[in-house]
Amino acid sequence: MNSLEHDAAVQATNDDAQTTKVNTVERGYYDDPFIRYFARKGSRKSPLINRGTWVRVQSVYDSVDRFLETYRESSCRQIISLGSGFDSLYFQLQRKGMLREGDRFLDVDYDTVISKKVEIIRTNPELRTALRADLTDLTNTWGAMTDQYILAGVDLRVVEDFQRVAERVCGFSLKAPTLVICELVLIYMEPKYSDAVLNYLSSSFAELLLFNFEQVGPEDPFGKQMTKNIEARGSPLMGLSAYPNVRALKERFEKFNFNEVAAKSMLEYYSKFVSSSEKIRTSRLEPLDEIEEFELILEHYCIVWASRSDGDLARIEKLFPPEAG
Image (tube, rainbow, N blue to C red; front, side, top):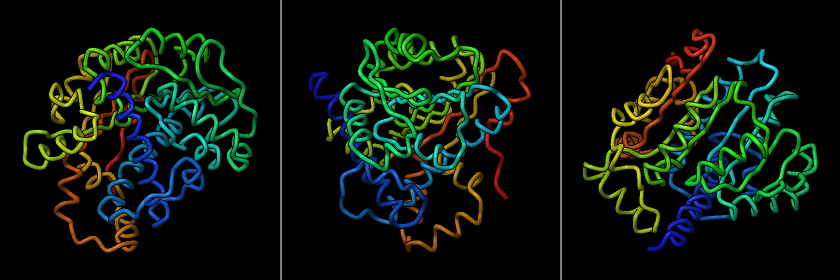
């Protein structure tokens, strides 16, 4: 497989993710009136897939909520979503009134993905209304922007392009508190490229929280089959062998300039950090008989929160999730 075929296969995972999220929303796991505009109608997913998707989405939303609350007094809060695909997070934050004037949000993905996303937004009346401003094309970069929301086409394997877009094209401040979301993106890159991205972020932004979500555990029978299935679709997990488990991922982020790093399996996150009331609510939406398989799936995904600060280190503790009662 050549690099173009690999890139196309990775981009196809975006379509699958959005279709799955639409199913999860339709079953009542969480509320997102925008995601349906970014996804094709697909076949109905199993309760196992729906509940796992909900836990994944919940972990992202929890991290965003904590970041915005921790820096609620800052005049500018920045969010960068790497490999954002057709995710609707910005529109969700707007709908909930969580962003203020001065906040910035940057979606980064392949040129082709960003171009399609911009076209969807521009041709959909509901999305244009929710955006509250017209998109204008970026200069010398694929994408478009408003004063607050930027969509930029960048190949993250060329970290210099990412730096140029973030700092010069988008005008992101290196001193403002910044949340970077890496949801199933670093693992699809060769470690030499993803390490370059992490090195740039951790050495450049003075107040940084990085959220990383990806697969782990390729050694056991479930992990071997998971890896085989993903490779059969033409999108191998290039970083999995280098960082195969929770401990290895934690050590990876500790190599860079982060003050604090926490790494948890999704099963630990679900068990300790999702409230009992939410577990009860979602259990009533659909019957789930495959509890052991559900837990096995969660064991094969990992969340890493990594933060650094050149200022008040006490803030860092607030960025990490408290255990649920």
